[in-house]
Every structure is written in C-alpha cells, then in structure tokens.
Amino acid sequence: MSTIITQKNISKVFKDFRGHTFQALHDINLTIEEGEFFIFLGPSGCGKSTLLRIISGLEPKFKGSQIFRDDIHKEDFSFVFQQFALLPWLTVEENIFLGLQARNTLTTDKKKEVLELIKSLGLEKFINEYPKELSGGMKQRVGIARALAINPKVIFLDEPFSALDSFTAKILREELLSIWHERKMTIIMVTHNIEEAIQLGDRIGVMSSRPGTINTIKINTLPRPRELRSKEFFEMEDNLTKLIIIKD
Ligand code: ADP
Ligand code: MG
Image 1 (cartoon, rainbow, N blue to C red):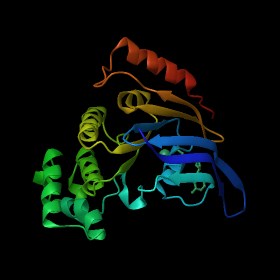
Image 2: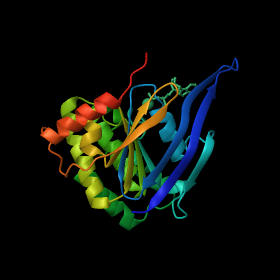
Image 3: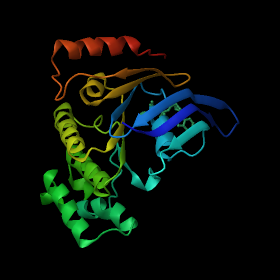
Image 4: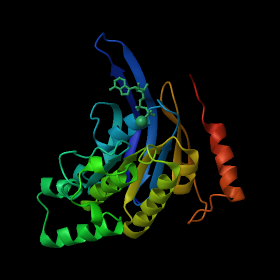
C-alpha cells in the first residue's frame, strides 16, 4: 500500500457576512492509501462534506497541510453526490460523456469502453432519456457511470445512497463494490449510515461535531463479501454506535 493523500492539522472556519465565525473542522490528521475504500462516518453537521470537499480540492480554503502523491492530480478525481447533480437538459448518454468531452478525450475506443460500462450498469435502455424521466436509483446509476467514465484514480462519494429507498440502495452498494473490485481505484465516501460504513469500508473515520473532528479510525477486517447478519458485523455496529457522539 502506498499513501496518496496526507492531511496534517487540517481545520476549517466558515465566516458569515457579519464576520461571525464557525469552526467546522478541527485538527484532522489522515492518510489515504492507494486502492482503499475509506469512509467518513458521523452525524449530520459534523463536517463530513466539508472534509470531502477539502480532500477533493473543491474547497480550496482551509488551514493545515494537504499533500498528494506526485502522480495524483485533481483531473483524476470523480464525484458522486447525494442529489445526483445531473444536467437536466442533457440526455443520460450526454451526461455520462460530459467529463470525457470536457477533457477532450472522447476517442472511438473510449466511447466503446463507456458503452460497455453503460450496459453493465443496466442503463442502455435509457441513454436517450432525460434525468427527470428516471427513478432515483437510475439517476444514481447515471451519476456513477459519469464518475467512472473518466477512469478516475480516486472517486469521492457524498452520501450517494441516502436519497434512495433501502432496496435500491442495497443493490447499488453491491454494484459499487463489484466495480471497485474490478477497477481497484481508491474510494473515499461519506455516510451517516453505520451499516453501510461497515459493509463497504476498509477503514472508517468516525467523526464528531463542534468542532468536526475524527475521533477514531477503525480498521475493518471483516472478510469480503461481508455477511451483514454475522455476529462480528453486529459487534462492530455496536462498537461504532458507542463511538458516535451526537450533540444537539
Ligand atoms: P455534514 O456533511 O457532516 O452534514 P457539513 O460539512 O455540510 O456537515 O457542515 C459542517 C458544518 O459547517 C455545519 O454546521 C454547516 O452548517 C457548516 N457549513 C457548511 N458549509 C458552510 C458554508 N458554506 N458556510 C457556513 N457554514 C457552513
Ligand atoms: Mg454532508
């Protein structure tokens, strides 16, 4: 394993227009290893999205140091968001090819490869439809296909399944895992769902709020594919539940 991202003493203060300050993150120290599935787990408002935005470069203003391995560039990052963030005026196919077009890398071979990806995600029947015609689950499949189309080295997901019903979420989690096994990219994902964190993560950064910080990084050695109803799974669930401190 090789470290691709190192964060030291990261903190983030938001200032409103009156000059009032709010400390969203405090003293985050973290490394991300190549090929791992890293999860940030914590209650709403603890700073998960802010931290993900900082790591991925979407939020350039913060204190502390963040270093990427030499060969890791922001162009190799992809995003999947809770609310899908598809462009409503583009078809499914156009949404999926958008990142490649923006990078000017849409060759005939690449197009073939992405069409395979579209098929494997069960989207081929929908390629000419517009996002509003799709169910939430299908929209998120498009979101995932769009993110994968550029062959990212790192994929960032911010609560990608929390807007979906539990059955659809379960299927998409399994599909994400099989894509990860096949492509072996690094995944960094935010969730407030403990079961989801244990099912997916190699390591789970447990966060608490005010100020947002990482309390513990739990290494998840449960064998894959993970048996969700095993004694070990429930033990880890209890263990993590105790670590999550909710402040109102
Ligand atoms: P989470 O994703 O864990 O729910 P966020 O990272 O979205 O938490 O937010 C952490 C805290 O920072 C929250 O209290 C939120 O209100 C605050 N916050 C987030 N973004 C901004 C912003 N742009 N301006 C001011 N406060 C913000
Ligand atoms: Mg969030």
